Image 1 (cartoon, rainbow, N blue to C red):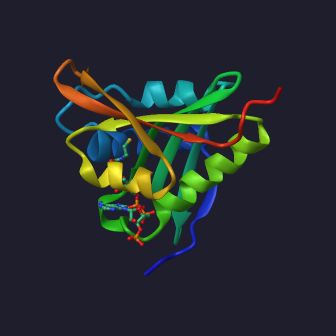
Image 2 (tube, rainbow, N blue to C red):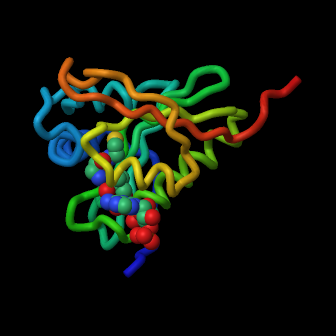
Length: 156
Ligand SMILES: CC(C)(COP(=O)(O)OP(=O)(O)OC[C@H]1O[C@@H](n2cnc3c(N)ncnc32)[C@H](O)[C@@H]1OP(=O)(O)O)[C@@H](O)C(=O)NCCC(=O)NCCS
C-alpha cells in the first residue's frame, strides 16, 4: 500500500534517528561514518539539505543532498526496512529533486554499493543512469556503482 509521507527538512532533534537508520540500512558491514555528530553537521550546513519523511508520526526515511554550483550529490537515502516498496524513497527523492531544480542544479550524482542491486534498480527506476563502477570505494573493499540524472541542460 502506498502512503503519502510528510516530508520536511530535518532539525537537530532528528540527528540521532537518522544516524541510526544510516548505520542499520546503509552502512551495515562497514565502519559507521554517519554518526550523530556528522549528521548534526550536515543538518547545520548551508550547502546541504537533510530531509526526513514521516507517516503516522514515525520517521520512515531520510536523505542527504550536498549542493555544489551546478551539480548536487545525493549522499545518503535510507528507508526503514519495514517500510520499503511503499513509495517513501520515491517521494523523498522527488522532493529533493524539485528543490534542486528550483536551485538551478543541472545534474544529480549518486553512488551506491555494487552489492545492492535493489538500490541500483530503484535509482534506474527514478531516471538515473549508470555511469561507471569505482573499485573498492567503500572501506577499500566494496565497489560502488555511480549513477547520475540530468535535470536540465547547462544554461548558455
Ligand atoms: C533503495 C531504497 C531507498 C528504495 O526506497 P523504497 O521506499 O523502498 O522505494 P520505492 O517504494 O519508492 O520504490 C520505487 C520503485 O523503485 C524500484 N525499486 C525499489 N526498491 C527496489 C528493489 N529492492 N528491487 C527492485 N526495484 C526496486 C521499483 O520500481 C519501485 O516501484 P514499485 O514498488 O512500484 O515496483 C530502500 O530500499 C532502502 O532504503 N534500501 C536500503 C538503503 C539503500 O540501499 N539506500 C540507497 C543507497 S544510499
